[in-house]
Image 1 (cartoon, rainbow, N blue to C red):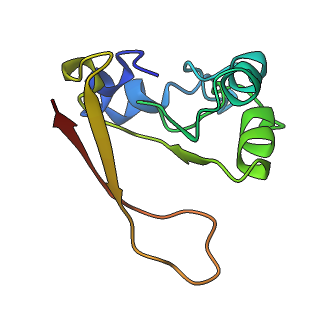
Image 2 (image 1 turned 180 degrees about the vertical axis):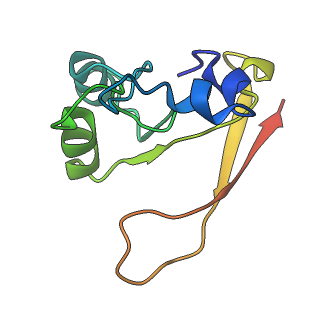
Length: 113
């Protein structure tokens, strides 16, 4: 999901975009969108240029629960998505295995054809 949010990464206030109650406000995947990607397109992974796969104001994280329960992967905080073509690219994700963790840092490369 290339929302352009990575342009805010150098300003923590804009990137996290919290309101007076500390609630995050930023774009994310809608549950129906990831259900479509799973059921109709057999997609195995999704990525977002925000800090979450879900929209910022969620309290229940339906996209995380649905998507990850399907044994799919999700990447957050991806930079420079706007420079990647919509097709004809291969994404390579290198991630260390962290014992007992549900996530961790990774290095993401786009190989352009």
